[in-house]
Length: 173
Image (cartoon, rainbow, N blue to C red):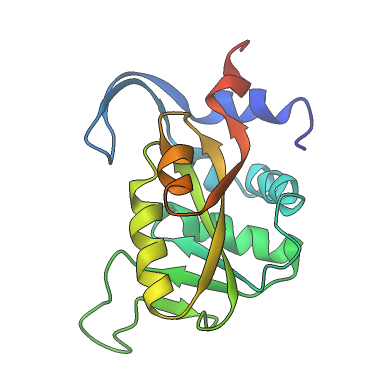
């Protein structure tokens, strides 16, 4: 569980208001600019420390989604003591041509790691891709759940979403 000041500090660092188009295509009047807490080494370390307590005990690999999930997964790996994989939206057409770089995922219990979840769309797509590579995925973990259907979309794919913080965490701020 994060310390009581962490939600306020994350909110102050990354909460924006205005009109924003989200990855899902939805328009929102508030936005969590996750790169603001990911770019602050002290704040990111505190986020990762809080998330470490939420990692399921049978996890073998932490898989961070391109791009925002990469900084989070590296910081989390330091606290959880687990190897990590870096998951692309699509395999690159050169070099290794891999979808997932870093730790092997085949035959291993993999925890998906994301920064902010809205609809859960990219997590669902990446889970399917990793499962096709032989990963065992039953859980996902994010820093902020916007509480806009992501948890339900993942549940439909037999994936449980846990979050360090939710939109509701910021309600009183």
